[in-house]
Image (tube, rainbow, N blue to C red; front, side, top):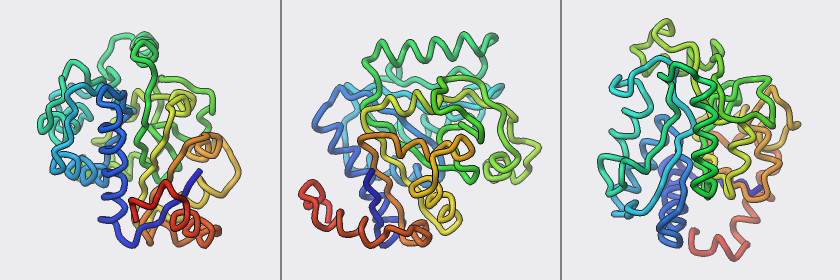
Length: 258
């Protein structure tokens, strides 16, 4: 794992967007794992503004709420259409989001896993981290071996997402269909972006704490090719900060990103 701290939110976002653009340029047919959230909106705007071509890309989103129609403004399909898909040249037939409206959620989850496998697996998975320490909607006690499935959301997660639902937690769906922790770890590269002081404690637990199902993001420590990119505020509780900065400043692979 590599942990990279940038001086501001904008510079952290810029680095993530540049990494993704470079991966797409190197492999135009890349299979991307995509995430949602306020900070991700900035990443997608950077990619749109950069003129990056998604023409041959395929994408799989981490999750979707259960019971929200795709047309609902709070659905993640609507989010992705608004912030990325409608603004780039991607073939919408190649964009995939879990079917939270399926009659049989178990079957929908299995089909999603199979589709990822048939696509050759995810090359680069973009991640955020929730206040409960989740990646995707893998709430506390999610197995490290878990696959795509329906998951009940914690009050912490629903409160965090209430802003998107008019500030009322009662409007936030109680369940979501999400890639599992094991599904995420199958990606060949992970890029996790976290910003703001509210994420400082959970970032430190995920990166430097014990690997535990209570903090599903801690499973990224097991991945052989994982990059965690944070701003100063989100980095403030990291104990190994001096070493992480040394690696970023001295490893040849990062020389063009300084």
